[in-house]
Image (tube, rainbow, N blue to C red; front, side, top):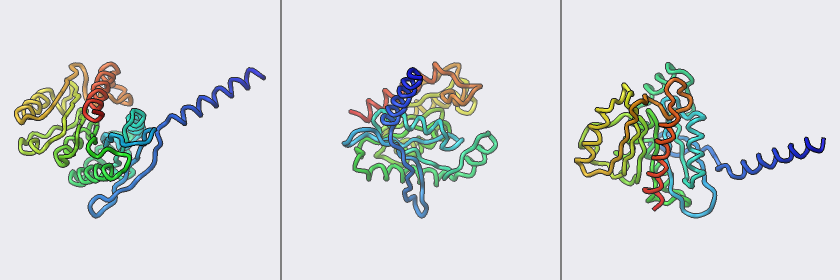
Length: 250
């Protein structure tokens, strides 16, 4: 019995320690044109002015995996706003995800994201000149659109997101761009990635893309049981960490 009590106390202490270390999370709303946008805000420990991130979900919506990623970035010292582009809806199958994505007008999505950027800039705990964005899948494409729409954005990490091709649009980007893509992604083939990189370089824009030869789409998501590639995912996420640290913490 004594041993059982000791083990129970140890578990309680571990859970308390975990809770104390976990980033604070709260639901927030903010104006987006004539509407109200929403998301989850994750706060790092410690006072002061922190770099910040807009985190943008896949076509599944703001689900548990994206929340885990957002919390992870907060634990690394960022004020993180995970924007809910679907306004509370999520999908657990491709058919519903496709419907939700098709039902999201691009101008509304970009407006919500630029409004999220403005919200972060207004916070006293955010260094307004050190704000970046990270997105996956649909969110990766929106991350690029946010870079086009918001010249004050500092850094953007695109994970297998749709790539803009219009040179005049890409010329508006001031953020440094990092991209991680799958060599077997039929929706965003390597040729499209190379063309995007070439155009960005011709415009004198900082860009760093990497293609993982054996990876397909969504290779970073552990819920993608058929296509998850843990080694490639670890490398890609490590690239993002180094990129954000270099661009937002210095």
